[in-house]
Image 1 (tube, rainbow, N blue to C red):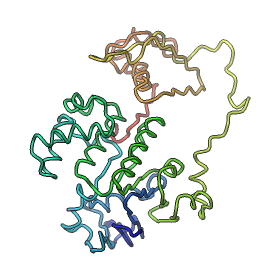
Image 2 (cartoon, one colour):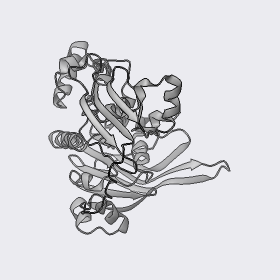
Image 3 (tube, rainbow, N blue to C red):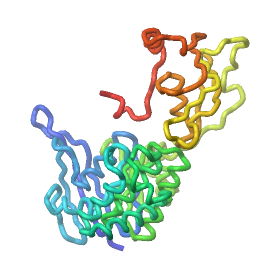
Image 4 (cartoon, rainbow, N blue to C red):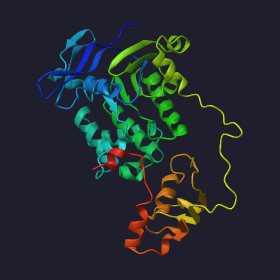
Length: 370
């Protein structure tokens, strides 16, 4: 079966201060077949997103792409007007962070209707019917209510389904999913990938699935492309790559998913009668208009030199617990003690001083750094 889209000898370069061109990516060759998933894997900085942005014609201005793009046998110049016409029509994009991509001040319905009317030329009634059908197809509960809600009112997995619905609204031939599960827990990540796989099979879509998780992608992709430092170091059928990886780097990616079992004695015993450094007692938090509390009577202790893992699916209260412990949420109940000091008894100045002893690593550094 021949590919409907081929991209050959893709290079991405950046002009340096000395006017010389610095290679960031390439050469990369890829092919998209109808009804087939191509997995592109590699560590952070390997060139996965640059490959997707080049294919979409969305590279930032300082970067330049060159290569040979062909669609249905017709050559198309990269970054040309013909290339731009593929975007949002033949090629659709499912972003890594839908909350940063969806318009925060517009309802989901307005964003879907705009796409359906602008790209497909539907009238208001047909567009409204199609919008509901799209949300049903991506298995979003209560489509009518969802159309009236804003992006921040959905969970991470639900927002990703909305992004997929927006991508499908233009009836594309290919979905380019750039690490669509990176911020989701394992169960919901599988649900999203199962959804993308079902859409691939039902619609005959080409799916370009980008991830750093080779074992996860291997469960869904028929073909694999492995990148390292901007170069394609391995490619082939998934079963072949998994059975006999040719490169040591590919073997490392496969091995990264294997977790060694804990052995008795791995964790150092806690000294007897050692007071806890951080204590939370009876912690409760209910967000405004929420049907159920995010936290309901949680107790927690953390001792010096100890690691404590919080595990749970999206929406289970992990981030809320962290914010309550730091006193970053209004309306929280319960007591928090840091080194024996009750944080509830501190004024603003004393709390700022004590916070200098607590470091925070947030989930999304891009939203945290200035």
